[in-house]
Image 1 (cartoon, rainbow, N blue to C red):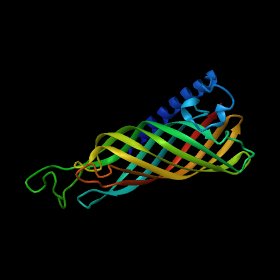
Image 2 (image 1 turned 90 degrees about the vertical axis):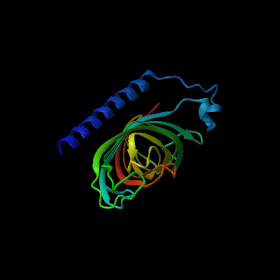
Image 3 (image 1 turned 90 degrees about the horizontal axis):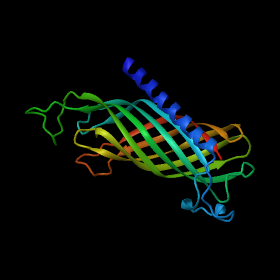
Image 4 (image 1 turned 180 degrees about the horizontal axis):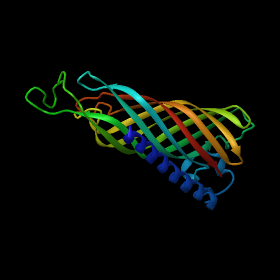
Length: 238
């Protein structure tokens, strides 16, 4: 329990550091690279810098998973993210009922607790099912990137609903969730988020995402990891 509390405090500290960095970058008012106002209306992302910066953290507790042994395990899953977003279709206009955006999430830290290994012996060898083997649990740390992100914001006014989906990958410090799996895993997530404008250019976000992690068949085994994660974050619009 003490280890999990320390882990949660560490994640909160990282998120606070990321929030300070994003706020400082916004205050500097980095100029857009667009050549003219017409270019701002085009959804050509390389022509202009992101119009929105953000940070968010997420967590899931006691998520169930299975490895090749068939034994049910449980893990905690934590994420810290930096978001860069571009409004599509002429910009984000709160007076319109629907707005779209493209985003990239940078993942400086992710943690998946209680990932199993096994004590190899004459009965339990790599590549075997190891029935009844007692797992040796470790925490796995990761960094990653989700370069494919799309969001649809619905509603007018200071409180709006956003539906988002993204895809990317995580590189873990060990093979997850099985020693016969891989360190690199693909990710996919989707779900709703409520956005509340708390002041001009600042938006509070609280959401729920279904998050999937698996190696896509690139390892000897591919037991996927699924978690329902609660997210909390801030956005700053230029």
